[in-house]
Amino acid sequence: MTGEKDAVRLTAWVGGRVQGVGFRWWTRCRALELGLVGSARNLDDGRVRVLAEGSRDNCQQLLDTLRSTSSPGRVDQVVEHWSPAQGGLDGFVEE
Image 1 (cartoon, helix red, strand yellow):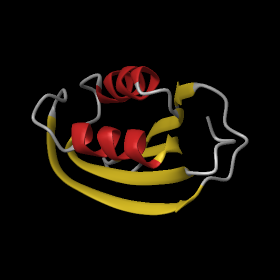
Image 2: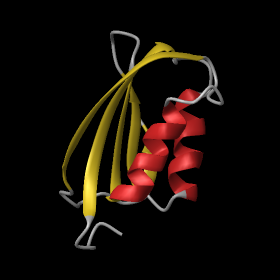
Image 3: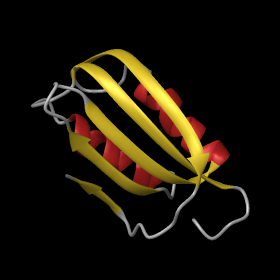
Image 4: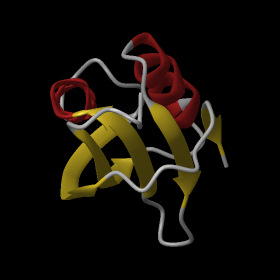
């Protein structure tokens, strides 16, 4: 997927009650359904950082899903950053 011309990298910092509630596992499932590669990592400040690469449309779908009310826990804020895909990612992992 990351070899495609339209591939992008989405980095999203998700704040709220998102640690200890299955949020990273849920995010991984949604990302894999969309054919994305990357990771979801707990941060020391209580947020989760989501890194995803793939098509712009699929990354946008993941971002929309992160902002939806269907996630485990409670999402209060999502800060996004878009950049060109860098590659080197395999699968989608929980870190």
